[in-house]
Image 1 (spheres, one colour):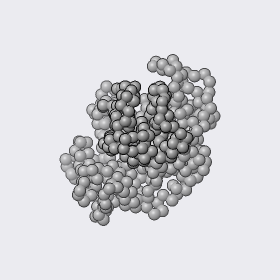
Image 2 (cartoon, one colour):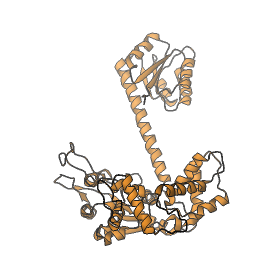
Image 3 (cartoon, one colour):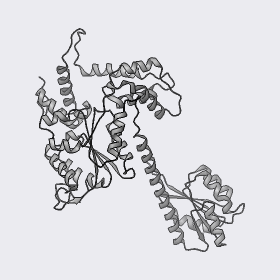
Image 4 (tube, one colour):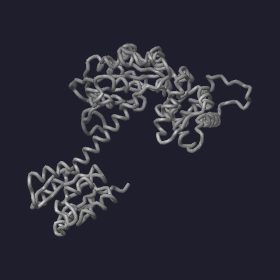
Length: 460
């Protein structure tokens, strides 16, 4: 991608001064433009996004102080460096009052001007970073809104308030797509940590041999490729909130280390000899099979009880269909702000009849796709549901041609897992993600159905 040059505009009627500044500041990263009158300079500001203006006080057609507000009307982010050969305290104060970023008195050294311009660019960068962070904070705050029908989430709201007023670990359970991360964010922003870091790590998405270093950090030379010491996510989240998503996928040998961190509030990097104190609010999330993982010796009983000091369960969308109208209204308002879009009652009934295996995430995706694909037409997301269902049946290749024959669910599930493993070359993490189940669930299913894995899948 072509890098956009920074733009400096000199508005001064002294040609020698303009050329000198041009030669000093114009380079591969910066384009310097010249205007000899206020009107000419203002026209350039209207046509181009100017980052820094070097503005003379005395111009043939106006004064710099008069021109300042008009320049800022074109782009309020522009930094104006006011220069004058007639310096006075009153002029400096007046320049700052009308929006100038800095003030220089002629004559000055070119090195002084160069430093002032660099400081102006640095201010622009800091302001942009702050604006981006504020935008992210606002977006994250918006994402903590729990949309539900009357009375449906009353108990969950109560538990969020309890969790926010405590520093105890929280365990959020529910199927994929129910909104566990939204609940975690709500706890964070309602607590006394809203301005602190909120970090999430998906335990199922990390290779097993890297989880420990990602969580706790590593020292230089701790393993092949560790060319420098690095912090883990626990250190990065110090003072804030850390969400351990898909906690059930964490390898059993690391669970005892996590338990130690929660109990002792300190970590030791991989390859390190000393402990580092940490103060992190831990929220874990898992789908409904965590208890099964305990029974199968895939998850530690003591870690489960330590994480679930406060337990919040989010029911699947099929068990709270009264939320669907409110959710649809919320997603449409958020994604189609420039359009007056409303779902017909018949369309809402179609959505209420669907079982929503992907829960709220699936509903959001269907609404978003419908707004894009059916633009200018009556919104009918249920048509996309039928299309998805037909495509999935066709691709799965596991339903009998005899419509009267009922295929056992176990057979369908076994074949579905086998085909997914084949597609992803036995990559458990990718397969689990595609099937929208946890890594521990996939491993248990493979073991239960006796699916041989390796370079290929047993085609039995």
